[in-house]
Length: 261
Ligand code: NDP
Ligand code: 8X3
Image 1 (cartoon, rainbow, N blue to C red):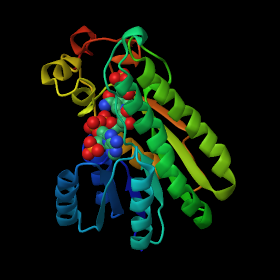
Image 2: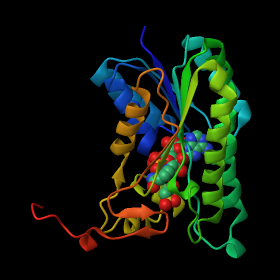
Image 3: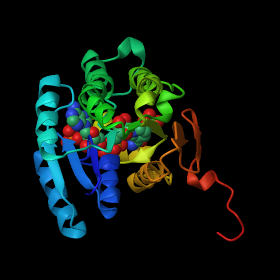
């Protein structure tokens, strides 16, 4: 019987790349997001390329009723869930605390913190009864160190860090692994969403930078998931070569190149 992975926010970016990576490994894939058309396209692509079973669930992680309904439907379709990747998330806006937009704050807190909790609340009992499972939370360098104008987004990722540590303690007895992957700047739809569709501004974030790609994070997720049963990566922070922390990065042109490049 193939193993099953549930990935929230798999219509683009990290989530889609993780779905592809695990499909290559023969997993049954459950992908979620709000954009049903994209989920259908990805299902078609993965099933045809890798001959795996892909389940799609369209829901908004901010709405616990939708989460409960979707997870009930999933439990009817699969016997076990081996891996949950809590990935759905976003930044909305970038401004100082005194000028912050309350709607942006609500959407980030509701998605990145409450959404992650709602999904985990449904899946953790299943993993507990299996006495087996792996929860991978996608945090951020923003959850390790705050940066200017990042205030509420950073706070939500600090919350993800705290919840990851807490889950590991609470679920330890049941043999459930809990891992945080904390990426730095990565080229996905993240900035397009943060800047509300402003393509120029979003592109500008990655100008002159060889940023992380979604596939890099997918490889790391696969690495974390493919270690022996007694090994659990607790926390992993990853940046591109030219980023040292939330607050310090250089452009590719500023990097001193080795002689062979
Ligand atoms: P993308 O915007 O490419 O992907 C975000 C995914 O989250 C989409 O599939 C989107 O699906 C889903 N999503 C957002 N809101 C909701 C919602 N309310 N309900 C359900 N699904 C939702 O960005 P990334 O791949 O970069 O982001 C993935 C995660 O990685 C996020 O948690 C982000 O904070 C984190 N991260 C990103 C970094 C980066 O620089 N890119 C760095 C560090 C962490 P849909 O719109 O279809 O609902
Ligand atoms: C996303 C990375 O630095 O844009 O979590 O906040 S950053």
